[in-house]
Amino acid sequence: MIIDRRTLLIGTAGGVAGLTIIPAFGQVPPLKKKDHYKVGFAQTESNNPWRLAQTASMKDEAAKRGAQLVYTDAASSAAKQVADVNSMIAQGVDFIFLPPREEKPLIPAVMNAKKAGIPVLLVDRNVDPSLAKPGVDFLAFIGSNFVLEGQRVADWTIEKTGGKGKIIELEGSVGASPANDRKKGFDDTIKAKAPDMVILASQSGDFARDKGRQVAETLLQAHPDATIVYAHNDEMALGAIAAIEAAGKVPGKDILVVSIDGEKDGVQAIVDGKLGCSCECNPRFGPAAFDILYKYANGDTIPPMIINPDRFFDASNAKEVLPTAF
Ligand code: AHR
Image 1 (cartoon, rainbow, N blue to C red):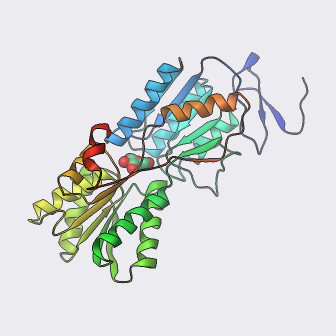
Image 2 (image 1 turned 90 degrees about the vertical axis):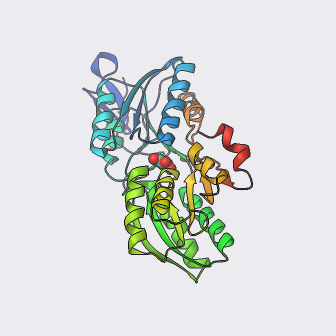
Image 3 (image 1 turned 45 degrees about the vertical axis):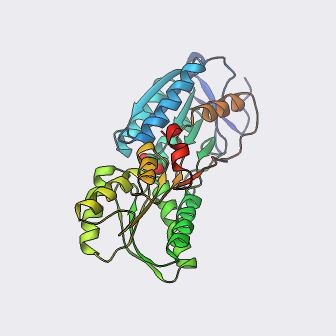
């Protein structure tokens, strides 16, 4: 057996006779060609339609490809998600699909998989790029351009209101890449293009409907002059709509609500005139994620960032897309 400068013998990571050769540094672990793989999918939580749609897509595709799927649900805990990935490593999966709940706390999980010789594909959320890199520490990131989603919602809102309004922002989970990026995309666009608009308050609703409703209730009481609610996902927008109605105001008339995802209840709220727009964030990752796994095993070059194209929904097309929304 020849060991060059880029390889290192590890005695505990599984493989033939308990020995696996993995790259020492600077390289994503290789993946052997097989017809059927044992793969891990470490989901963040299952408390909203987006997550359920993503899980269904991954499970359907695993079944189609004859893969053995080790599925876990971190129940909104980054610490549990790290433990879930560690358990997948111990179970000897060939490949891990990971939507990291938050950008920093999931770094150890990514690095542990790399050390164990298991390639990781980040699906939908990213990790802090200064701490772990695609093409080096993990195979690649596949997902939406979250900054662009925030920009598109801001552009639509500016156009709709003539660049005037007082905004309450409901942020996603603290430390999650879509929360950071959707805030940046929206806030920077408002600042650059709409000097007469102001963001009155911005607080996390954890991407959850009820938390979004509670936070919106508090912020609407503190800022009765608000005319716009920007929510980082449809679930929080739906919570905000409930809070606006409970305050005796009319969503879509007294207060414009705008958001991201394009889930069925969100698109229905557009049809009902309660939600102004929703930038799509497509959760159906299964086919593309498994294509990447097979391409990688085949020796194809995998781009470090693979961006899903997102559509945009408002009153002009909501009825038409409703039947296919998740
Ligand atoms: O990472 C994507 C986001 O996570 C979706 O917008 C949200 O609904 C989900 O929880």
